[in-house]
Image (cartoon, rainbow, N blue to C red):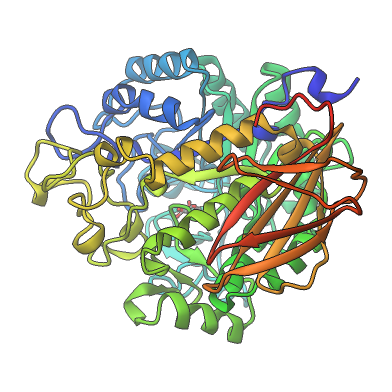
Length: 557
Ligand code: GLC
């Protein structure tokens, strides 16, 4: 049976939206967003066309890594709400056709987690072996540091424990040891718990780090760590056949492919496309899509039921770690020349609109590309209205500022004083005065209206997410042309990376007399010549999604 004849592989063409409850909408006036606030704003997401909401960590936390440092994997941080509030949120979301997934951060715990407190206190603690200990740090302790501004070793000596422990991220985030079967079992229980409460899966944090058992002295207990990822997926699917794992895997394409599992896809259902994202920025900086096209050609096809998660920005720095030093410098020069905009020597703590000088045509072109290329688009809150960053916030928090709902000093996020918010509001040209949901809802030309349109057209066109994608050859170097075919349907999308208008000539294979194309984003139609030649204008940073219409077609255009 064709997979689309069943409706359950929903993640193949979902619209995913990531947010942090803390910065979304505050209902109790304490300056921090809350679960009830998000519930009140669920219709904004429904209207936007979101079908899957990804919640950043909402668990109890000392908040030294924005909640990615957890002290209770089964809890809800009381500052955000209760389990009851969360179940109501999930119920409301599902009522609007939105599934909810959440971050699963089990590579490490907070050093304040009761497990770690017990582990460090005594060698006989039942939790001692849940972490990774050594009497001496290994020789490679200074290699592969994720946060080089704060850390210089992966191992930290703990006075109380009298040993060194492994922490691949901050030193306050000791790594759990998945070579220990008790840890593996506990992670399954955590998954089972949240599935029962109604989550539809997880965004799995730092997957390659989770599977890396190199530092563990008991690594032999788990000869192939991918066996564990397979177990985890099997458990998840057994408990809930529609639940998914969307993994954070920032490796080469070849290595990332292994995280989808075998040909049938028995590990992660989705992996983020970090390579395509980085090459897109290089292409934007060069006003030439050649590098992106190269990446798309090299990108391995995921297993039939799996999908790439595509994105423009996320909650972390815009990492450029897979580019060469010179390429990275090109992107820095174009989009983040000030040192203060750069982070860890590899990324930018910026959002897209300020990087592109708030050029609306160019921003719209980038999102059109996101929705039309194969993959499941993942948006970060605020992208739909073109929010900017606030560099006064520390590190990656520059892009985690309060959601801008209306004008006013807190952007309608909270009734608290602007100085008492979970993060500073964006200032300047992209402040709530100029960028907010309320104004853009009423404006058919706004970015918000554009993204709604893209989401709707994307959902209507199985060609884009299910189809066969071919990058078309032509003679206009500033334009990417890709064609997506599925059953009888064909869509050809054109994206111009240059500020100069372009004319493109393509051959529309398989066309005959009377064939036309209709732009799904504007409704404009034009004829394909009898020999199959299509000549099309693409404006400065222009884009179009052309549906090929043959006689007798009954497509809605
Ligand atoms: C992931 C998250 C990041 C976090 C880190 C440690 O990379 O995206 O925000 O700091 O893991 O959990």
